[in-house]
Structures are given as structure tokens and as C-alpha cells.
Image (spheres, rainbow, N blue to C red):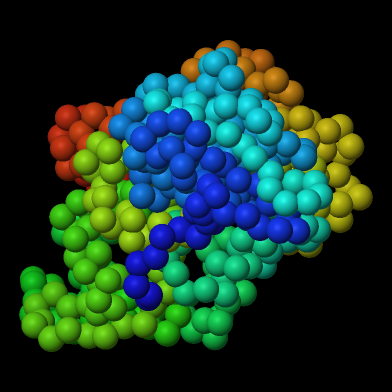
Length: 442
């Protein structure tokens, strides 16, 4: 673990800097509290760049009317897109309010009281560094533009030792990407240890993370190393870090900063050499703003960030993934019905790669032909959805129940700030059962 660093995706320069003979894009602040600052967008076109007031944003502004995570810049089909991130005060381009729009050179992007302009400096066309042509990174499969632009960033992160947060919707393959980063880096020969914050009872979290001594608590019949010690010399992946108990967050921060842990029941510190990766489906910026996640821990972990795109934005990857899953189970892709493949290609996959993998497995094993709508019915109308897909009663019942449980658990946990014990009491069910529902609906 290394000392904290600022994210390096975007380099800040003086607006007066001249770079002869270079082809570089800059985002310059032309009005507002940060007027005169300029940000080079060099590696922008490999991944999204966040603009906001959070320290974890690559373009960080001091404007109080700018949200922590205000908007993002993306490179799409040779153009720069601005995507509002549900900001409080909105995003405009040349005075027009936008949610998802193209930003051209010379146009004014306004957030709060801040105005920014996209500029090119140097000779030649403003272009990104060459995008990867790879169709995979480690065990991550995908050759779509949305994936290829991430691969160069993933390669650089893999070769570094800095902490990294991997964000994305449920089922996008965040854990597989984390393991691929480990396997492609200098720690590949070391252990890769996964700690799932949702799979351990709250009273055992500290002991699982840091270990415990004999007799430290009832049932501790022998000393045991925690996951930090198990991952020594390798990589520790903390899965669903947004669910980590707030009482444990300062202890995790201390371990990351000092590169040492202390077992429960011990006064002796233990030095550890661990590369830390964290995975979350939550918006950690909003969790910080709501006071459910420590700001200092977030900044320490977000030295590097990767946001995996959902499958619906990965043009062409469905067929590639289907072929990959067929190979995994030893099935002949020639047996796949062309109509079924077309249905899979047109579906938007709310459960992402995990849902596609399960659909392929069912089709190969049982020959189940599922009807997917090219333009799926809105999530809130689950009954209409199952009726439209003409599901058998047993599958329809399971789909409706799963959707209800997913939304109920998310709602009750949000109402109680993620506190499982309080949510369980309010729901009239046991904590163990609520955790089971929570794990099931992830």
C-alpha cells in the first residue's frame, strides 16, 4: 500500500502554458471561483472523467453550487459526451440544460457558477491516444468500444500499486476485473483474497478483517489470521465496500494508511504488504454526502477508479459473451438457434453479464427458450413484463417475487442507512433472513 495520491487521470496545468507541437485537449475554467485553471484531458478518452467538488473527481472544482459528482465526460464515437450525474443544480451547454449531450470545442459548459470551455492546443487534430483493439483483458471478455477504451487504463492500474475502486451495476463483472488486474500485475504470484462485506455478521467483521487471538471472544478457541494477513504480498479485494459498518471504517483507514493491522485481542501491530482493490455497486460519493461512508477513507481508496459499463452499452459484446459461455460449458455454438441469439442481442439485460451467463446456462442445459423484449417494459411493471414474455407460471411467480424482494430490501435498508439490524426489526424478520435476501438480490 502506498501513500495517498491525487487521481492522475487528468493533469492540471496553468491556462497560460504552451506546448509546442502537441495535440492535447484541455478543459479550461473561464468563469467562476476557479477561473484561470485548466485541466489536460489527455487520458480522458480511455475512461470517464468525473467533474465535481469531491476530492475523488479528476476535475475538482471549489464552486459550492457544484455537486460532489456533478457530471462526467466520455469519449463516444469520436465525440466528447457530457453526462449529468443527477446533479443538484443541473448542467448546461451554451445555456441549454442537458442530461446527455455532445460538447464541442468553443462551447461553454456551465455547472453552478462555473463555466468551462473545451480547447485544443498544439498542431494537428485533437485526438485520443490509440484505443486498444483487444477483445479481452485477463478474464474480462469484451471488444466493444465501451470496453476497449478501458483496457489501457486497466493495464496501467494493474502495473501500479495504488488502491482502486471498481464501480458498476450488479452483474457487470467487477470481481472478475479485479482478479484480472491482480493477475496482470507484479503481484500475480501472490495471493488474491476476497472479503465480502455482506457475507459476514457485523459482530465478526473486525475479526475477519484483522484476525483474532485465542480467547479474544467467546468461541475464539485458537488464534486466526484475518484477510489482511492472508493477502500479504498479494491483493485484497473488498467486495461491496459501501456496505462496510461505519464503526469499522476508521480501523480500515488506519490499516490502509499505516500498512499494519492489529488482531482482535492483541496489542501487537502486524505489518502487512497488501494491494487494496474495492468493489461497489453503490454511488460512494452519495454515501459520503449522506454520512454513511467516511470521506477520508473514500479519498484514500479512490486513488484510481474504474466504472464498468452495463451490458446494454456494450455494443456487439452479447454475441461475443454467448460464444465464450458456450466454450466454458463445452457446448457447440452451432447448436444455438439463430432466433434465440437475436433475442439475446436485442435485450437490455438489467442483470448484465451475470444474467446473460445464467440465460445461456439454462438454454444449454434445459433448452429453455425465453422471450425477451427488444424494448423491455419498465422495471416498475414486473407483472406486465412477465405476461408480455409469456413465461410459465413457475418462472413468472419467481420473477415477480424476486423483483419484490429486491426492491423491498433496497428500500428498507435505505430507510435505515444501511443498518441491517434496524432494517430487520422494522421489517419484522430476523437479521439472518434479511442478509440472505440481501445477498440473493445483489
